[in-house]
Amino acid sequence: MLCCRVGATAVFFLGLRSRRRLLMISRVLVIEDERKLRRNLIELLTVAGYDALGSGSGEEGYELAKTRAPDSIVLDLTLPGRDGLDVLGDLRAAGSSIPVLILTARDAIEDRVAGLDRGADDYLVKPFAHAEFLARVRALLRRSAASETVWRCGDLQLDVLGRTVVRDGSEIELSQREFELLEYLIRHKDTQVTRETLSRDVWKEPYGMYSNAIDVCVNSLRRRIDKPGTPSWITTVRGVGYTMRDRE
Ligand code: CA
Image (cartoon, rainbow, N blue to C red; front, side, top):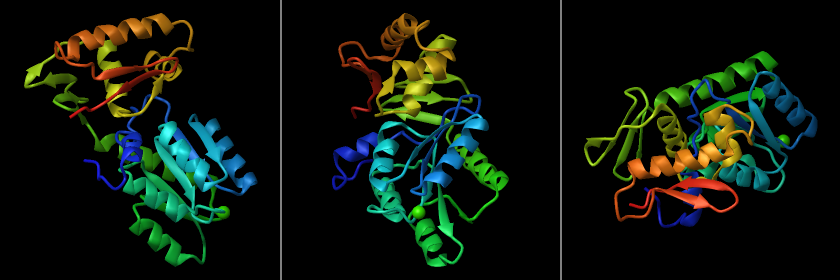
């Protein structure tokens, strides 16, 4: 659970780790200050079918990691200001387990070791081939997606493989859409999930067509999973979307 030292920042990260199912679009955040390389990597990822976003600074990259729920992060270690090791250390200290691929210079063995010691999942030495970069990202996402099959929020437990939801030891019947919605929200627990994101990742449709259906489905899901007389697990964020919170 949260450490008091990291306080409120930590709640942004709990549950942020990439666990969109492989059929969903995975979001990759590239934090790299070399503009040309950043652009190239984003273009490469986009062409490969990922939802790629980038930042040229450690400060902004850290904020994007908090707010945009990336499934993995490509992190250059030598950044101006808040460098990559600081970003990585702060992410891990705040409870984030988003898989991180660090980018290092060929002669920076100490950086590589320090990065791995601070919680990086893999590293790639510059310059690297595009094919290898994409293979490393795929491997990160695969390991991440496969590693978690049971998700919890308080006494609510969702088993991705068994397709079951249990609260207080009793199974709760959900429609397929309600299950998918709950799975998405619980995977991104403590994160503000926008209606646009739900439309794209759960309904697999452009936002607009399903905006009303999302609200209807959320309300139906609340009736099934919430305990009578207690606040809902799912909080409405006015004008934005929803957040699933573990209140216990
Ligand atoms: Ca750099």
